[in-house]
Amino acid sequence: DPLPPVCGQLNIAQQPRRSVLRTFGVGVPLQLELPRVEAMRMRGALTVGLAALGVVILLVRRARRQRAFARQPAAEKTCVLNTVAALHLYPVKSLGAGSRAASATIDAYGLAGDRRFMVYRPGPHPRFVTQRQRAPMALIEVSAECSVDDIVLRFRSRIEPRWRHLWGLSPFAPPAELVVRVLKSNAKQMPRIQIGIWDDSVEALDAGEEAARWLSAQLADSVRLCWTGPDFKRPVDAEFTPECALRAEGALPQVSFGDGFPILLASTASLRRLNAAIIARGGQAVPMDRFRPNIIVHLEEPFDEDRWKRVRIGATEFAVVKSCSRCKIPGINQLTGLAEPDVPQILRNFRLKKEDVYFGQNLIPLGIVGTIKQGDFVEVLERGEPTFNEEAATLE
Image 1 (cartoon, rainbow, N blue to C red):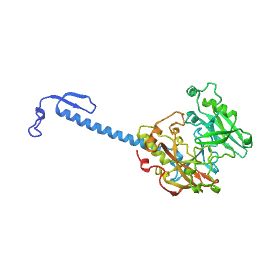
Image 2: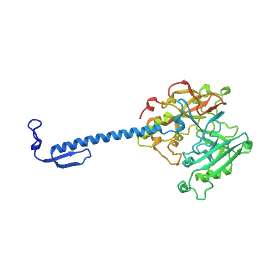
Image 3: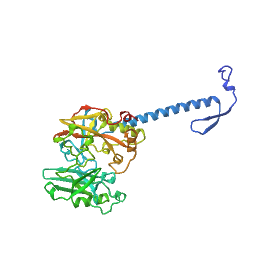
Image 4: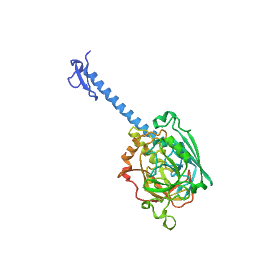
């Protein structure tokens, strides 16, 4: 039986068959010999399908962002807000991922045992070496045991035999482990070397042939190891040092082999914010070891630390003096030693100020004694203008 008339006098069943031509959003015409009603049904079904696909894409993106916020160490998940989530010490500048500590002692250079040794390249003008020049330094782990009489460094290389060709190493490379003992009483007999570190020239003590041979073989480069020694001098930048951080008689605080200041602080909230931006651009979330901070603070608000000027951690006060400008090391995977350039690029998209990219804050302790520990409450004693453009920090 013919269908009843619809839309006035139009009877679809009485319409002749004809070619239906549609373009379904992919630039390819689709031509089918179908009744008009079936073509309309197909278009409706396709619209519903595309809408469902859009919903699925949105849900997947939301799930990926939620995973980014969830990807943090279990110890940090249980932390109370505004407390120290973790402490890290780096015995040798730019080697490995550092050693996690339950507590740390304050001394004249920052945290005791942090960055007191450094790799340098000898020559007419000796100069420091970091992962910027030799990325496989990330694969050499080191721990330190310090006593009244000596410092024992334990090195362990994670450069596997299958990677030796990649790094240019000989298949007859030395053992993967090395123990170096530095006697403090021998400091006066150790060779003194004038070494360049950034814009500074400092006098340091060479740590001997055994460490030099081992590190040179592992890194396929002529390098040596140096130590600050007991009378090391390297004042911080006076331009960024507030009056409250000055020592007796107005003397500037000292820093060991850190980039410029004694202690580096970063927050879990800021890392989560960065990871959200990385994942939104199709990348993988990164751990905090890319930024090598000493103090990791558990915060709720991303980049709240940009406004800090003075804080108390446990019973010790610190001046927050300057945002930390970053180089390409955050783009080096600390597990593989391989470059991942998307991290520095994304940082440049929303943490760029003039020519530098910033993440983390530099601290100076307001004394040369004290102890901080994991779980200590972080009290902000003074706030001020942000060290970074607050609007830029909120951009996706």
